[in-house]
Each structure stands twice: as structure tokens, then as C-alpha cells.
Length: 395
Image 1: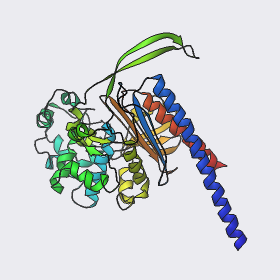
Image 2: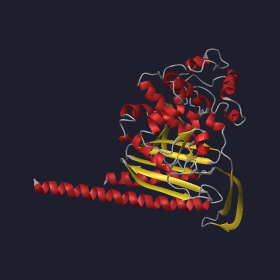
Image 3: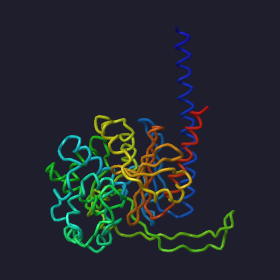
């Protein structure tokens, strides 16, 4: 009996050591890759985190908060999350539904009564669950352009009476930001609390996401924030890489933080550091059930509507076999295994976050520049992780 116990302990020890070595090698490759890409595209700053089970395996930061190199990015530097805000909104909304404070089958006109569409009775058919899954039947990104025109939400909502739906609710996918913002009045009506304070109370504080916040005012008050950068120019250097492709120099311009998408806080209003996102990932992997229950996580990640366009995404397309949207999360079949994922893009920032229930593994990356290299970094991470851990399980 003692021999068997010692053998079992030794086998477990070797397995844990092998996993630790695999993770260390994965992070070593990733760190070198991110450093190389950041340098190649002259991106001012970045940060990433890897979590496995309920542990932070790696957390790395690169570069500076701005082009002037006034301060280095660290693990607590706050970035705008852009559309990576949507999983927070869907989590709170679904949480309230499971607590029977609202119903996901409630028509959104119950909470936004002045919302109307050109087709009579069409607005009343759109339910909260359709907003959560981008299956409202509205044309994609309806009236996003008006957010840039300094229009108030009230004025924008009044404009929807000119919009004719492109399909019945739940019949087609159409990504939304303004309509996603309609979740806020629903949440605030049933809780009598502000959306920001509710996120703080139910998610940020319990998970010790100490740098996370909602809104532009809080962001501007914080000192350790990554500044936004937009591309000013790409200049040919006269040199070519090993593939014979022209090497370009990327010139970024530091710009002001824009208030536009902060108007739709559920869609794009959250600010957070990479340290915050590591805790968010661990919770979504199921390791904080007292905060995010198993039933809640299951409800959020059920595929609701097919998103065929995602199958053509650069860098991802060679791995994706299927793609759907759930409630606030994308559900990708990546080399035959699910990844729960979301990306974000708003003036001067990009964000990516995802986790694999199969591998009990999560990854998030933040950059303070509008560069598609973030797609390359994320997709390569998941390709390497799947190759490493799934191949090992087959042996």
C-alpha cells in the first residue's frame, strides 16, 4: 500500500513538473514573439497574461504608456477594453435574470420605451436575449457613426424609427454597440443602482480587480494609464525581409481619449489592467463559483447565433471550423475544441481575451495602438497551446 502511494505521488509530481515545463516553454515562445512583433510594428506598449487552472502562469508587460516613453507599462497599467466590455455586461444581465430580477425574454421596449423601428411592432419583438447575442435583426453597427458626432444616446435612439430590420429577431447575426447599450437602462431599472456601481459591487470588488472601472471620468483621473495611439504613417525603409517583402517603419501618433464609445458602457465602457483580466479569466474558467456560478457560465457560453464571417478572420481562419456568438462571448471551434473569446477595438487601443474550457487555460493581451498584430499574437498562442497540450494528451 505504501509503495502504491509513493508511486502515485511520484507520478503526480512528474506530471506537474512536466506541465510546468510545458507552460514555461509556451510563455518563453510567446514573450519572444510579442517582443518581436511590438518592435516590428513600433507599438508603444503592451501587456499579456496566461492563466492555467486557478493560477497566473505568466504576466508580461512591454514598452511604454506613450510614444514619448514617459512611463513604462506594468501589470497595473490601465487600458481601454473596448468591446471586451461586452462579456461584463452580459454577465451582469444574465446574473440578474438568474436571480429573477429581470427576464431575458423581456422586450427591450419595457426599459427603453421610446425605442421604435420603421416597421410597426418590430421594436417590441426585440428581447434582452437578442441584444446579448447580437441577434436583434438590426443592420450591423446600427448608427455607430453618430457616436462620433457628439450625439446624445437619447437623440440616437430617436433616430431608430427610420431603421427597417434586416431579419426577424434570432434569425441573423448583426453586431451592435448602441443597441448593446440598451442593456444599461434595463439593469439600472431593476437594481436602482448605476451600471458602474453594480459592476464594482458584483464583479470588480469580489474578484479584487483593483484597477478596473467604467467610464471616461475615472479613466482620466487614473495616473497609470496607457495612452491611445493611431497610425500616422508607414514608411518604406528600403530593406526587405527574408521573404523579400519590403520592411516598413510604423509611425504612431499619441491622441486624446475619445468619449464616444463610453456613451454605450455595456458595449465598450470598461477600463482594466492585465492584472485585472487575469482574475477575470480565472473566474470565467470556473474557479470563483461563489461569484460566477457554473450555471451562469454555462448560460453565457451556449452558442446562440452563427457568425460565418468570423471563419474568414485573418490569422484565425486556418484554425476555425465553426463560430457562434453566445451571450457577450464568441464561441470558436479552434482545431475542433471550443475557445470562449472576445476582441475589442476603439480609437487607439486593441484588446483580446479568451479561454479554453478543455485546457483550463486563459489568455489576454492589451496594446495601446490600433494594430491587427493582436490577432496574430492571439491566434498563434492558441495554436501553440493546442498543439502542446492536446498532442500530449494523445500520447
